[in-house]
Image 1 (tube, one colour):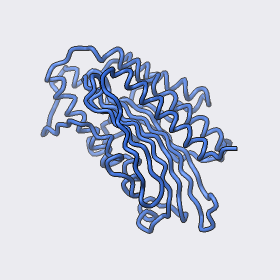
Image 2: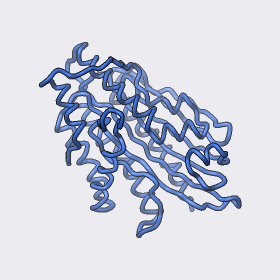
Image 3: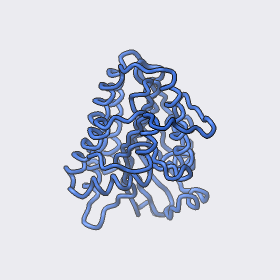
Image 4: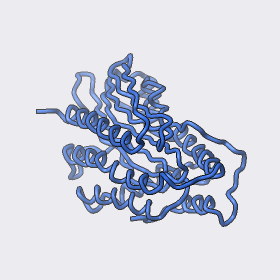
Amino acid sequence: METVKERFTHHLQRMQDLICGSLEQEDGSACFSEDSWQRPGGGGGRTRILQEGSVFEKAGVNFSEVYGKITPPLRSQLQLAGSSFFATGLSIVIHPLNPFVPTTHANVRYFELYDEQGECCDRWFGGGIDLTPYYLFADDCVHFHRTLKACCDRSGPDLYPRLKKQCDEYFVNIHRGREARGVGGIFFDHCRPGNGSTAAFWLDFTEECSRSFLPAYLPIVDRRKNIPYTPRHRTWQEIRRGRYVEFNLMYDRGTLFGLKTGGRTESILMSLPPAVRFQYNHVPEPGSEEEKLVTILKNPVDWA
């Protein structure tokens, strides 16, 4: 019998292969390179990066499985009470070339905490999938959210509204007047057995989330990847990518956890886009498609 961490680890490795193969097929010209790495304190991972493709300017699909002792700085920074830990996850970030194709992010993860005797004293699942468009197409947002709602509904009717709300509250640049990073999706963290749910429930649900990523995103890519665009569209894309960078470096829990646990910096920061623009005090032209997007980002929408 596989343990929870063994089953989930094997699932993530299979999903990494499936997602990389599907993205290569969608791109049609570029392939992923793999960089296997070892963590000095225990564990390692497989970083896979696609760059300068016909459709995807940069895509990362990273698997990691790390473990080791909880150091005093880590215990203080992350408020962990145990002696050692195990963590595994799959992280996906895709930055398309065409500004009419949205950026997307997905992550699923599992964490175990052990006491001084090596017994598991805590464990939880987490994850999320969200969409970051540069130009707003309502049918793309509807498709994305309805796909995720169907995923959630297979596990319980109350999950989607709860996880969507958590996503809307999490992927926000607070310092930008609570401007959302994108049009959301679902987000969950520290989901433990208890209160009527079991480890098996969260394991099944988290695996189902990872399987929902491709059907939620690839149809949008197909619809938008051949739309003609201009340098002005690219400039706006790079300005909005700057907001993406701000969130990831200031608020993203996965980024902060990876850096604080001695993870591989290159793999952790693969989420950052290849070309970004920080333009002072940029304000979209009134009535423009760019302003339309920013307006939506200030007010969450029930897309499903």
